[in-house]
Amino acid sequence: MRPGGIGHRSNAMHSPSAPARQATLTGARLPARSIPILYICEELRCCNSYWCAQEESNLHHKLRKLAFYPLNYGRMGTRFILYRTRWNWYSGPIMPFFHFIALLPLTLFGFQSQPASTTQVPNFQASLHGIYLTSQTVVQKQGEDLMAEFAKLGGNMIVFDVQDSGGRLAYPSSLPISIEIDNRNDKIADLSATVQKIHDRGYYAVARFVLFKNGFVAGKKPAWTLKRKGTKNTFVSNDGPTWLDPGNPELKEYLTDISREIAAAGVDEIQFDYVRFPEGGRGGYVGYNFTGDNQFSRDQAMTNFVSEIATELHYLGVNVGVDIFGIVVWDNVSWKVIGQNVSELAKHVDAMYPMPYPSHFGYGWGGHKNPADEPYFFVQETTKKFVEQTKGTKVKIRPWLQGFAMKVTKYGPSYVREQVRSLHDIGIEEFSIWNARNDYSVSFGGLQKTRP
Image (cartoon, rainbow, N blue to C red; front, side, top):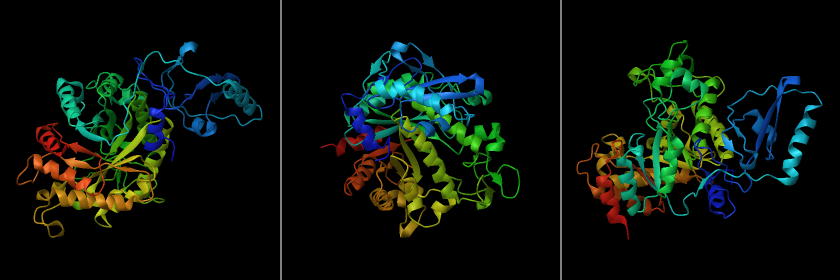
């Protein structure tokens, strides 16, 4: 089991010796380990470099890509707030000596942090059943009411927006680039307090983060966008000039820093949506360049990105999920176009959220007059294909269920109930329900009928 995987993480969370989350004003949290990672950093002005010690065997890996979060070190009474740093290593013979001296006390004696205050993490041994909430709903009374009602039906997971396809972050990010381009908002004024509220109600907290479809950032940073093939002009898809370049190193660094910032608020999982390329341009034209396209195919570029960012988050004890188009497992073309290789992505993430919405299959698909009216078949068959393509991995398949009436002739509680039953019949007990308006009256009615 790789570090930070669901099985690994749950064992740490439920161990009596596992450190509890920090509930500080900064929203810092400690990794789920018996002795938390300790970073000590100081500038060595004599060689214009830095030395760092950490109680961790992967010292050099972490120093290559290091971010510090506001951690309260208890007895030390020190709070460090440092951001991602490009390390200028001094290669002379004396630096390893500094590394050894700095690390030795921690290796011999260890260090136990004392958080200012703590809150227990809910026990999630049971299967996860979730609903989606917008950034507005999650902080309003409507969100509290939905969480209270959903809990009575066995709900134990909340997926909420920290950034949707509109582009701007929903919380007041303090990252320098976020401030520079005003990629911040106060829809969620206090992200860590919101996460704590979700935990206090017994829910597993999942932050939904839309990655590469972002018209706001594309407008502020045109250098980070996909380029029309053979030009330096921004590629215009059917959605407009909204798609970012997953190979751009500056963009990758920024998205990783945002993810770390979200992780520092205490979420259990970050769910990446729109972790793909566009379906096509105007008139169906797929003609764009991305950084590294002379070396990697679309799916390789996307898998590389997910692998790198998942590694960073796993070191912080945070699980990683990805939303995947349902159609990509039905043919051998779609996944190549948008770059979602299910078999490869599954090796790097903890949860995969297929979107097998019946309404998203076209009329006449596979000889089915209106797929939207066949929830059992399309949800089950799509999920079975995901299970087959992820064999040999530890990934959890947690499908999104259709909680809306699009294209459905007769939408009601039984529609949701049939989707749940279709999963249960193939041994899949986890799911999340999607309704963009957060209207779950029909869905909750269907869940009432599924409870024993």
